[in-house]
Image (cartoon, rainbow, N blue to C red; front, side, top):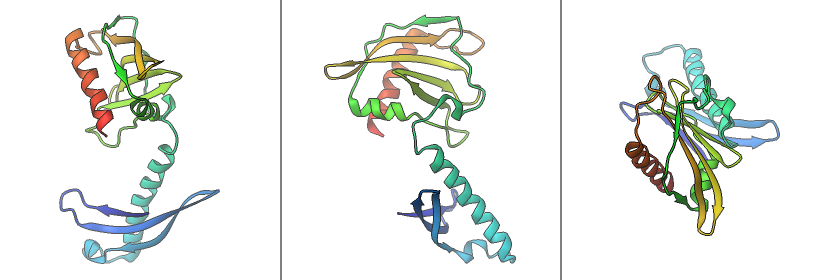
Length: 181
């Protein structure tokens, strides 16, 4: 598969390359650098270092997402506080949705506000900036997928300002986004 690295603002392609996998990990193959994208930089060595940095970040990301996300994949993770409430929300998800949740999510940019992962059958949803655990959702197999059998929401006012109605709507919307991703 060929990867293309584009500038966010202009959409200009800076470079492209393929990745090959072996027992040692991933290797870059067939790199092509758009010299026009770097024409203001005369030093070829500096261009190579910039592209190498971009590719290194991509490889780091691929390595981290080649397995389900773990609690240790994010810094400053805080447990759900003692100030919590159990939500009475009926949630059933499909096997495909459960599998997507099981892989978790590691934020890629400051705009990504959530980090989540699963341990056993419990989904932990944390705010990415603070590490606060906002929701814990335990799933159990059901006839038509998986059913949320226990949902806890953070009620520490210093960490989270939600209420039961908002939490129900947010969790439902979150699961719909997972289903459509």
